[in-house]
Amino acid sequence: MTYEALFEHISQKKSYLCIGLDTDIRKIPAHLLKESDPVFEFNKQIIDATADYCVSYKPNIAFYEALGAKGWESLQKTIEYIPKSHFTIADAKRGDIGNTSGLYARTFFDPSSSGLNFDSVTVAPYMGSDSVTPFLDFEGKWVILLALTSNSGGADFQRLETKDGLVYEQVLKTSQTWAGADRMMYVVGATQTKDLANIRTIVPDHFLLVPGVGAQGGNLEEVSRYGMNKACGLLVNASRSIIYAGNGLDFAEKAKEEAQVLQKEMAVYLDKYCN
Ligand SMILES: O=c1ccn([C@@H]2O[C@H](COP(=O)(O)O)[C@@H](O)[C@H]2O)c(=O)[nH]1
Image 1 (tube, rainbow, N blue to C red):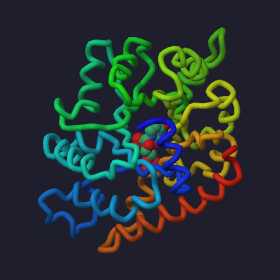
Image 2 (image 1 turned 60 degrees about the vertical axis):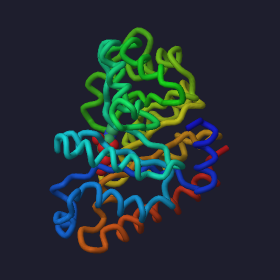
Image 3 (image 1 turned 180 degrees about the vertical axis):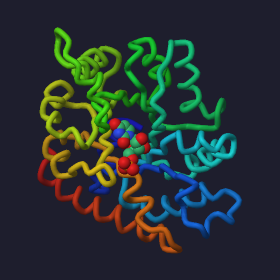
């Protein structure tokens, strides 16, 4: 998906909501456990109920890998089921020496190899350029680089001072020489809103993937006020607060209600801050 197509979809839907499909077999409603693939059945009903209110889905790969081959199968079926209009993110946080990164890229981007055809994958910048650029060899696919994460421990390294600024600032600056705003996004936690104005001076045009509203307590208004640019430039993720909003027969309806609340708020912020 292109930058322009993503912005067009956001404008049409008046939403920059990304729903995290962090589907934990131990947390899904009991009545689904009799299904042959409970994880896929849960995802399918969540997608059917919420697709009108979001522009993106982000399965966190850990939740699928933890189930072995069966989890991989649920992930493949889920990715095929998501409407093509929606931007898909493999939240896998990969990155290794170039040779190995190339295979991680095939895993998420080459359906003839793995059965998966994501639009993007999250990548850790720690191993540097040759660990990231193999993901960019796949035309039209995106890298979402970890910059300033939502967890408190992120500060251990990301906020270390160097002679040229903080480590996360260096990640933003150096990685711009690898790809532009049309192929690269950055992860910035919704719990890090004090840094958003600074981040926007370094990457004014890039999309930011912002996890941390909902269960982690991030503030959507602040994220939007300080993070939005003229093409919206935000994909705000919520996982647990949406997908586990209910736990009964009506779990998908409850998820829809939560998604709708966020979408309505986003419509207001798009009018106010997207310029
Ligand atoms: O900095 C980061 C990077 C990734 N995540 C992931 O996003 C979701 C958040 O889930 P919630 O249930 O809405 O808290 C989850 O998959 C994380 O692994 C993040 O939270 N922070």
